[in-house]
Length: 287
Image 1 (tube, rainbow, N blue to C red):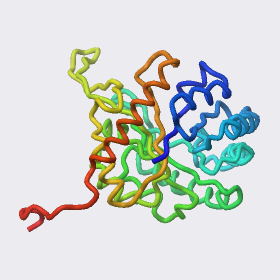
Image 2: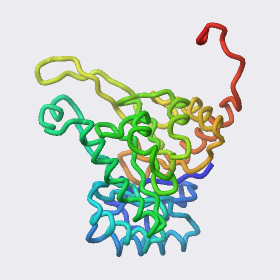
Image 3: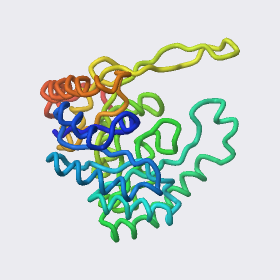
């Protein structure tokens, strides 16, 4: 198991050099660097590469690149990632709708956006070979890639060497939840790494008094995601890559390192607790 920190929540508070120090405090081995804009990405990536390597850490990926079908723009992001020694670049998952209100204002059909995504990824295959980069989508709520079940629709015809998935289990709990074992079996070789966080549902009231489903952030050991079950799914397919911590409960960035430390210990415990193999089936299954 290898651990990293996603820097999106930290970059507004710390310089890249300071982020590295927080990562060292947390005891992670890598960093998932969040770039700010395509105009600044090249210089940022070069700086991030230097401070990461100087600290003896690894770059897991660069994130926040543009919409995947804007090929010319992705080329610019790719040039920046390559300058920073990056091998993985998260491209933007097409947005559909976060809630009922956004759905009312979304003019495009869901499957039209899916097809545009497939066409965009087809063009990115050549860029992947040119730059040695793997373009990844995140299982993200409200996007066209909210569920692992979208993998066969969007990725399956493409080489997993040049495209893949950030498996964010908590996001799939919020929309399109699929049991971890099913998710891993479907995504398999397309899993680039996991996002680690936790959430719990809560009841909200809409402006008109309707009951609505909301959620709140929780620590890794205290939420709707059962990481023992996640580890079981990963063990069955012998997956043991990067686990990147994202969206922390601590509002004070100075407390993030301690939260990550505790999260790492919990994940290690979950992996130890998780079964290593399947057990004899219940007789009623599919009989």
